[in-house]
Length: 422
Image 1 (cartoon, rainbow, N blue to C red):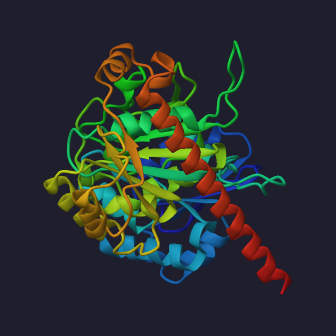
Image 2 (spheres, rainbow, N blue to C red):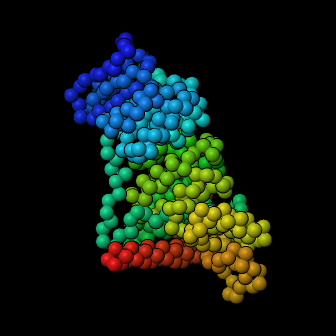
Image 3 (cartoon, rainbow, N blue to C red):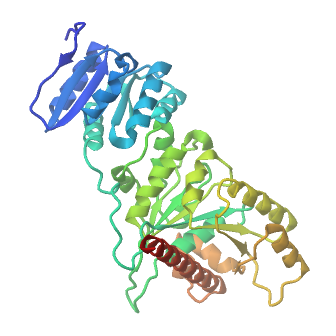
């Protein structure tokens, strides 16, 4: 195919309009061939670059459902033009950036940060190209937040779990909290009353998969590698249901750099999960990374798991300062693990509360036998021994936490309603 100096248009009687901006004839040919096989799609090709459209880029974007443009990842003018489109049209325009296959991960992230919904490398996998075009030009059923039914609490409550020090048992808390939040009822065959998803964001040392006997997932690794923003279909294919009924988005088996995810990716993922579930429980990494911010912003509660040793309390104080820097109103509950609640709090406990500026609210006693059996079997504590002191303490904590969150949500809803009436 020869490209002339003028605009080339491939006319088809299709409903969705796709604009391709490229100089490479082979790229144009492959995209033309791929889109020809997608029903109800119309392709128009513009010779040149995205930045070369100058002031016409916004008008082109308004006239099309999807823009596909060729870039090398280093052309700052293209990135600036894409950022301008995002500023002008926000999410109204969908963008695919096409690059050669030697692009680096850092360059791909620069493109997605500038506003691309997807980055594809040439030569293409035509099936993947068609899938991405179809996905971005079709409405996403999970992106639209339906109005909640009377008495419901949508979007889902987000509960983040973090640890003040390594080996303190935060993953145990996250797994068993998620399991008991299901609110299972029934004498013989118990059924869950609420849908719960457990997300393991510890990219390097996440252990949730082992605790509930599911396979690790490459979902987060691929997001980090590709720099793409997840959609509903991608998450649905990555989430597995554990034997206890909790849906799990596990950490990858392969090590991924902690700074390789973006806040945009995590925010999109949490928002999609909030639409589909009643509770989203997130097991946080111990490392402090920028992409934690959307989790903290959306969290109804942060559960900080610690011991009462001096080093652990000092570290907990540092974490509280970090987490509340941009989220002053973030509700943080302290969970003291491996220790039975004292009848009377001694001076050391009172001093710890003074340092943390909040009470030591929940206490989980040591029960090595039940905890070990749960890990070995890949099941929550409740499935191993419902009568153990640790299981009962976990149940009391879950009940109090869920009631508190629901009460605050109802109060907030009533306040908003009264404000509208007034």
